[in-house]
Length: 81
Image 1: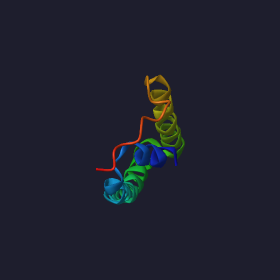
Image 2: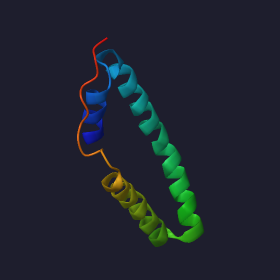
Image 3: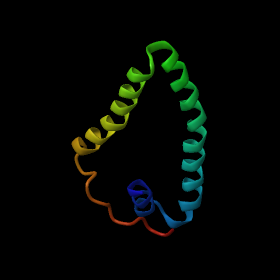
Image 4: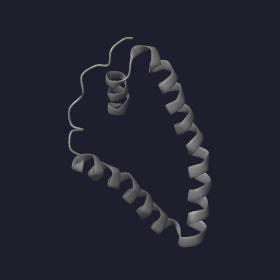
């Protein structure tokens, strides 16, 4: 939910609907692709290794956010024009 609040804070109000719809389309569209790739990866390297790889994939972005300067505070709201 933090990324949703961040998007609302930095985008002009008239773009909120478009950006939210695009993000939902990208996220829901990536789900079946990830399921197919995960199933294929299980067939190649096994279930346990695939789960460890997925866990690393979920944890790595958290470190990238922590190491990115200036992302810990919200910017000033965008103008409504």
